Image 1 (cartoon, rainbow, N blue to C red):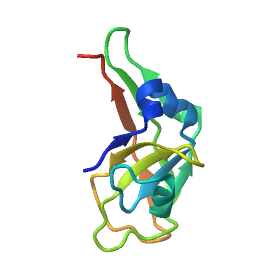
Image 2 (tube, one colour):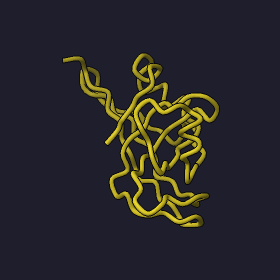
Image 3 (cartoon, one colour):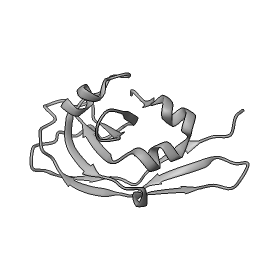
Image 4 (cartoon, rainbow, N blue to C red):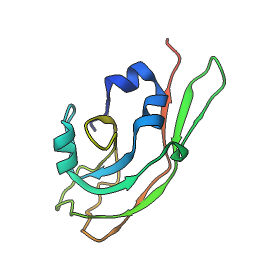
Length: 127
């Protein structure tokens, strides 16, 4: 269950995702630290994102939560027989900003409709 946040996300907070993540991708495989080229090569569905697809909430002094709007897309590739699916957010050209596990790991066939769920990413107050 690999997860990753780019240094820009850690340094710039949730706005780095909201302002720079122009693509949400479904990956057939992911390993921590995979390059943008590797992530792009493992993409089986991509949907365009804009700042309007993200909502930032949470009171001052508490955790801040970035909520991602659900989206639908069409698979452009297949996952193979035993996928380890992940959802990635990228800037569309060079950076992988955030990757999270997609827990169903169901087999995807090219042409399938992909329903990306409503996702959240939380930035907690320092402990």
